Image 1 (cartoon, helix red, strand yellow):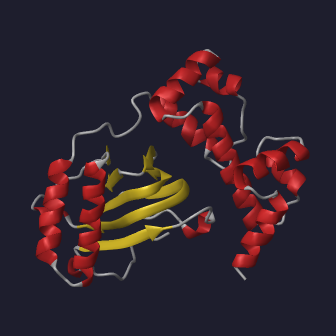
Image 2 (cartoon, rainbow, N blue to C red):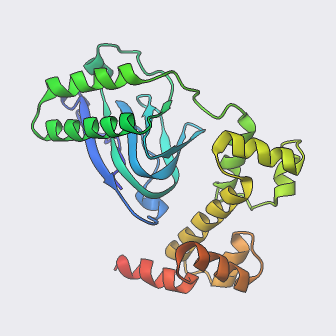
Length: 265
């Protein structure tokens, strides 16, 4: 996965536009997608898969057809992604004639024909970037920004943000549904309805996803015994953890570890 990074010695006055194709499948360890920032307006457009982006503490779940714009010099990182493909990069606000155009994150979903059109627009910008056709890129960005509606910058209920930040933070132990509901001062049923309404997934689905992401990272980046990893992701029964992991990935934890470590030799 290509993530735009700001380089100390780069002259962005000569590179007002950057674009890279993004194509990844499965899990890539966190070290390969570190926090980054650009002296440009950053963008991520997905044609497939999904990712969860953290922009200065605000979480954005992107799936196919979703565009995320990130204000210049704003720190961002990827908390989770799976089979994400599309385009990532950045552009100078001067290309669209407005220096204060993007002052906060913009998250927009395009559907059906619109999503196909936007995907092709990014494809043509990628080709034009290789051929130094800046006039086409500028007009394409103008067209893209004209298509955007004004979206919310985060989930309408901040409790959803808080929940997702909590479970994707590797330094915070997992809690049960009742515990998360108590933290939000809601009943378990009310909490489930709120999280599903705000994010499209139930709390249980999010917890399983965060648990799997954390387990994969520990299996790949450490030599911790499987039983200790099971404890680290909140599952005290090693057999249950192994069944859970295999159901999600098609591999046992040890098979996954051998595959991932073998691929990086």
